[in-house]
Amino acid sequence: MTEEEEQTLLGDLDADDWSTVREAIEQAGDWLRTQHVDDLLRSELASRLLRLSSHPKWEVRKAVAHAVLFLRHDAFPAVIARIVEDENAWVREAARKTLQRRSELSRADIHGDCRGDTILGLLSALEARYGLRARRAALNVADHLHHRFVREAYHEIVRIISPLDASLLNLEKELQGIPGVPDRTLLHARRAQARVRLITEFLDNLRAFTTEAPAEFALEALVPIVKEAAELALSHVDLPTAGIDVHQEVEASLNLEANRSRLLQALINIIVNAVEACSNQPRRGVLIISATPQTDTHIKITVADNGCGMSEEALRDCVLLYSSGKANGMGFGLPLAKKIIEIDHQGTLSIESRDGVGTTVTVILPVEQARSED
Image 1: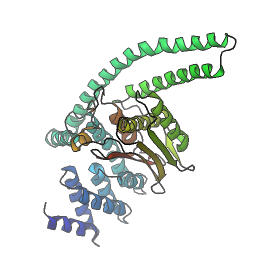
Image 2 (image 1 turned 90 degrees about the vertical axis):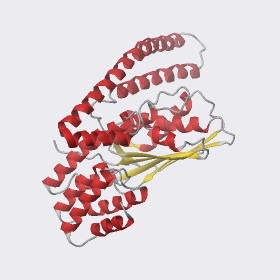
Image 3 (image 1 turned 135 degrees about the vertical axis):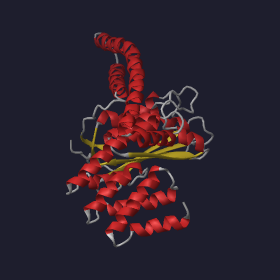
Image 4 (image 1 turned 45 degrees about the vertical axis):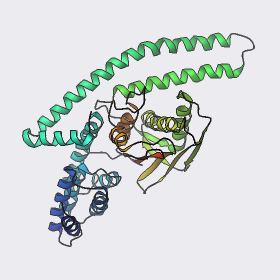
């Protein structure tokens, strides 16, 4: 597309005639679907679609609901939060379908073995030629294969975890029966049991990686979740953390609807990557974890480090399942975090990184989970 075409589209999105605006929204959706937009144009389209989600004409709002399906921008949660509870039933239904399709697209991103955009393009081509049923069949096959892998890995790990949990329980009982055993020794045993229970919860979440099992949500305070995630991330990595300064800047008043164990796992995976990136670097590592309100309806969490950073290719691959730049990495950490944030919690996860400079992971989460109508 030419610069003139871009300016024409942006102008039509600002037009007074609502039918012109609706047609421009449909065109914008086509451009987003075919990936023919750069970051600057994507931001411009996101800004206008957010504004138009409150347009007085329901036909325009319905067009927005369809167009944002392929919008890869932090504005997506704010747009969908507005229209999923729209006063018009047609708009609500369009928003509900977009949420459902968005989950499918997010899984395609995560399951991609080359490039997420390539997988999305193949799925779109499949749907265009054979219909939506063929697209869903392909996704079902992919989900089945991944579920089988995770299920088999789950059973193998549980075979180790179960006797370990029993051994730790017996150890605690025996220590309690020995006079003079320091309290800190018992504390270590209890902490180990707690970690085993957390691993079990994580395994349950991992088993649900490729399933449609809905997360259960409750109102949670964000500060203790971030604090626990940082403590666990710093304690279970196999690298020294003495040379890393960790700063937590989370507003005490922040609360949100979340599945605690899943969100905790996502944050741990993100923070572990940051800690490992800062280790064995010539300069002292700095890790900053912050959380602030982005809007009245969304919270912004950032995890920024001054570690080794990533190349452009590594940055593109880091959220793809089984893709890892680490010598012993399995490629599960960031893809699982992306799944938890974007599919389970209807948020967004984005990453900025410069090789040799550092990485910033930005998570946008809704304060309240949008409920689509059945």
